[in-house]
Amino acid sequence: CALSSNNSMVCFHCNSYCKLDSGWVRSVRPQKENLFLHVNDGSSLQSLQVVASSELNHRLLTFGSAVEISGSLVTSPSRKQEVELQADQIDVVGECNPVDFPFKIKKKHGLEYIRQFPHLRCRTNAFSSLLRIRSEATAAIQQYFKEKGFIQVHTPVLTSNDCEGAGELFQVEVSSKNQDEEGHQHFFSVPAYLTVSGQLHLEVMAGAFPGVYTFGPTFRAENSQSRRHLAEFYMVEAEISFTQSLEDLMKVMEDLFRSTTEHLLDQCPEDVALYHKHVITYTEAINILNSSSKKFAFKTDWGCDLQTEHEKYLVKHCGDFPLFVTDYPYALKPFYARDNQDQPLHTAAAVDLLVPGVGEMCGGSLREDRLDLLKTRLAQAGLDEAYGWYLDLRRFGSVPHGGFGMGFERYLQCVLGVDNIKDVIPFPRYSRSCLL
Ligand code: 4AD
Ligand code: MG
Image (cartoon, rainbow, N blue to C red; front, side, top):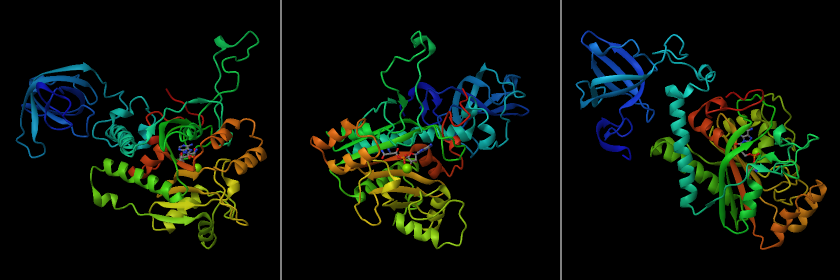
């Protein structure tokens, strides 16, 4: 263990001797001669049992208080744990008044309750677990792309483009101190926004590398209170050059999901066997929806976007496994999606990965690599001037490419079965809420 030192304390993480002699009290049990404490240091769910003489019982030794302990580690007589700490001295370094502390000893608080305390919820088992999982999943994602030879690109947070063209942008303003006398902003000569996606910048890099990715915060001013939308979320985006098939993209999406989940479940193949691949086209999806007896709130005509209720129904209908839906109507997709040229249907080479309980988790497409088609599409959307540079990418050493984005929070929702997206991010930002 990296934390190993000469200090004879147990590491709660690996159960070996490490310098870990401090933490937060999770339970206090005074008995006649002895005082039993459980102390947790955040490295795992396990708490170390501390046994002290009841003379050490201190009124400040309460649930939630921060302690430093010295003593010796011994084999525990109980079968509940291998070792326990016989304390010689316990110092309460941070008091915690149990009356005011919102979490109570021995009480299992719901996620909705603990969400009310964004500054304290990391002290609960549920949320400290989530934070360790986020950290592990982040490392697994980085490891996956590194092993596959992808280059990580730090795409900008501030940008002048609206990649998705949906107008869900947060515009960035400078503080009044940095405005000129008339109150005009003069920082950038053009309006700047928080990025909705790093895709276009990745496409720039796809002109020089076969595989690139980015993993960072993205922002959407969607006025939604739903259980699947945040105003600030982390997205893993990849762009793959020299590909002309959605199968190639699906392979990477599936591989990323599988290897990250494998890492998370720490080699539990039977749990990962849950992963089962299904592919249907958008047109098949519409047929499934239209032949169902279920009444949907939103329309299911060909050409309508799939809503969460539709996505969840399709996932259930196809066996409650992750489900790829391919070839969406061309008109539904942004300018960059590759035209399948399959008139009269007219679809784009785009694919979404839908997962149980969540619906859309990933979205991707092949990118339009034919200059003339791209030019026409941009001109129709009135975007040809702004995207002259994007057309250059197709003019100079262009390669067929495609990519996708996976919502990291939705991934965590899916793997952990967490109903509300606000419970898988440390500091949730959403419409009418920006606490802390
Ligand atoms: O489908 P989206 O909008 O696709 C893009 O942004 C592409 N430019 C990605 C690419 O091809 N490089 O978003 C991708 C994923 C969705 O599938 C969803 O998982 C997640 O981002 N997502 C959100 N997650 C939380 N809150 C929101 N408001 C989200 N909007 C999208
Ligand atoms: Mg999408």
